[in-house]
Image (cartoon, rainbow, N blue to C red):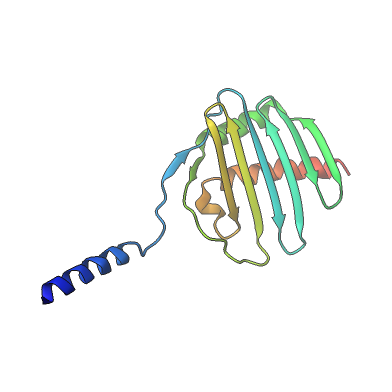
Length: 154
């Protein structure tokens, strides 16, 4: 009788405890930089309430927008910039780790999407988990070229 009650409770407890632990990260390859692709990045939040967006396609056309100020610029990226961007895309392995929102009041929120013939990959991250997303270097590079284009437009 004791074994009939204790054994199921023990098994259930072990099963429940096995679910506790850090989220497992399974790498997922980003779409290849060979062939047509497009990237969208939005960056919102932060102390000043940023609302920035950009889109880049494999043909080198970039559109950057500062939603708050209403500034928008479209330009063709240089071959050098496109080579660096293609290298970053090829080197990026995105994580499928799902973390709940961090509740960081002053963090930037990043919405990143890359679409190609191999599929669409989306990343939602903030400053606290951007490094774990696998897209940090790519997002930082995109932010730099976006910011340079917006500064040049003023």
